[in-house]
Image (cartoon, rainbow, N blue to C red; front, top):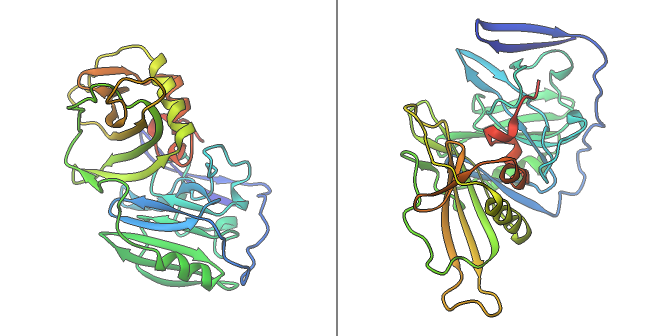
Length: 311
């Protein structure tokens, strides 16, 4: 039996689901640590996780309750959907990835000990160490005004992850408000080589806090460039409400054969209010083609337009 909770217009609804729950193979303590790692960021903190880990949710406080809306591997490391979230290690953020949520601490099949290791960023979990049974330990540390939680039955993995906790250097950790593009390269950025993407979400204090940051490779940057080139012009209109989400981008490109002198460099861009701004006042519709180009890495687990209905 699995107890779930969902938030509807009228308040809190508890649900109970019965039936077989597929469990993945248990983690094996003492296995060699992964050789490839990637850096994840949340607000002012960064942490390294194994490169093939998926993306998911983490416990968060909503209306006085601590809940987790898909605290499991939901999006693969490449940006695709995970078929069986119970078998995949993941890094989770306190973001709604489903409208069906579990009360935390977990009960039923999802109660401790877990079946896969995880790292939570900014989770509503008390600092300290909890013995979950069968060798599994959940350890939470405070860093840069938020928390990092690692759960594993491998002490070497926990030590490796927590030793990597540090500051953020890929994106600004916060924005005081939505930004705009104020300058444009005269001859353009040329052939795209990389695209830095920084996703911000509005905090309770009103600032836009960093939720995710990454640098996409040349192939991904070029796919995005092509998609924007096919999008239609559209005026930015945010209305009277402050945007809940804002995305800053930096497209870096190089010159190409027979290009005009001056081609290449880094161009600021922003995504907000359903448009993308690529130059001062040059805004285009955030259409399906542009969104599809962003369905890579962890972006489908953090961008509101990519999360969609998950229940």
